[in-house]
Structure formats: structure tokens, C-alpha cells
Length: 282
Image 1 (cartoon, rainbow, N blue to C red):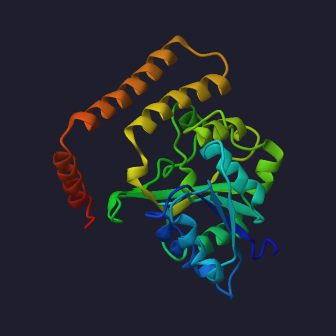
Image 2 (image 1 turned 60 degrees about the vertical axis):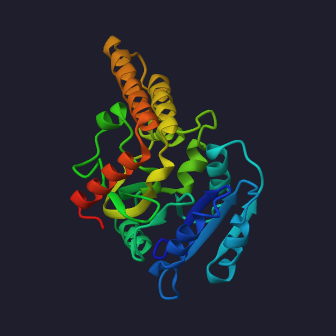
């Protein structure tokens, strides 16, 4: 494939995801870009040696798309993501984990058109957070909607990897995700490469639905700690106020964790239902 019709790799990592992998795969198969008159999709499944029915479900779709399946144990999410990068054959790729899904059937076509117009090295767009029934909890989440600033990246992670496409050449030139990070491996990577490559192109449309239940309170606390470590590692000398801000962020997520732990489930579900109604989701 040439740049006129670039091959796009979609990498889905999974482990015992029998209850969540099907919508992910079907969203890739549904892409207009995968049909004969458009471009080519290279679909890579990285399974962590699942012991449930994940692989049985995946194999139901083998003859419906150019899919390659690799199943073996790994040392964590970053390691699995790296295996996907190494297997990817596309001009650029996106990591779409089990449970997440491409927003609609036109996503990859629009991304390819953007790539052909701008020739970017990476691009990022909006996501919808959805619950396990597919209802939108937060719509069109796009922290960079008004533009990309390095300063914003220094303060927090405004780039969702589920909505981010990166040329495979970028990984070859700058290395893979750091496996020392369990949650914030993507943020560490953005900080590591943002001065070496051009700013990401902005895709002003929803790219993916991200499963809200994947954002556990424990992961948010760990993610806040890892983001703090990544900033310390890449931003050079730190001002004294930095440590106060970092402590405040971690404390905030610990507070959220405590609230979730001690709030009755019925109340939590009720609040989520109200939020969906207010946002227009049904």
C-alpha cells in the first residue's frame, strides 16, 4: 500500500476478555476502510494466554477480516502493547483494547484522509466514555479541542491512546512503551517523544468508545503516581510547587477511591443514570 491508501494496523490486546472482546472486533470489521474500494486494515490480536473463551470468540471472525492472532503470556499491558507494535505491518497504528470500540464505521476512512492531506506522524481525536451497556456517560471528550500546547502535556495527559494513531516508524526511531509503567505508559511515551516529533494532528471527531468500567479507582491512583514519576523523569528541574500539585492530584484520586469503596452500589448507579440523562444519553 502507498500513502494514497495506507495500511492501518489496529492492535487489540486482551486477556480473559470473553465478555468484552466481541464489540471491539465488530467495530473494526464494520469499517468502510476495510472494504474492497478503500484501504487495507491489518488487525492484530495480542492475547495474554487467556483461560476463558476469548480465543474461541476471536477465531469466529478470522475469515471476516485480515486478522492475525498471537497468544502467549506477557509481563503486563505495556509489554502486550509493544508486542502489537512489533507485529504491526501498517503505515500507522492504533491501540484499541478489548472492551473499547471504534466510534462508527467511517473512523478509519476519515483518519486515512487526514493522513493523506497532512502527512502527520501522529494524530489524536475525541472519545466517548461508555458504560457496559454501551450508553454514553461522557460524550466527545477531547481535551485538545482548542489546540495542542506543550504546557498542557506538562500538566496532565490530554491524549487518549484509544483515539491516537501513530506512524510505526515513530516507534522504530524512538523505541517502544516503557514496561516499568503499568498504567501511564502512554503518557510517559508522549513526554519522551513530543520534542522529537511534530505536534499531533487534531482529529475533530469522535474516534472511539472507551469502556468506563475499565477505569477502576485503583488504576486511577496508580496512574496518578506514575504520571508524577514520568513528569519528574522528563521535565528536568522541578519547581517546589510541583510537589504540592502532584500530592494534591494523588490525594484527589485516593478520595475518589474511598468514595467508591464506601458508597452503596445502588446510589452510584443512580448517579450515573442521572448523569447519562443530563448528557442526553439513553
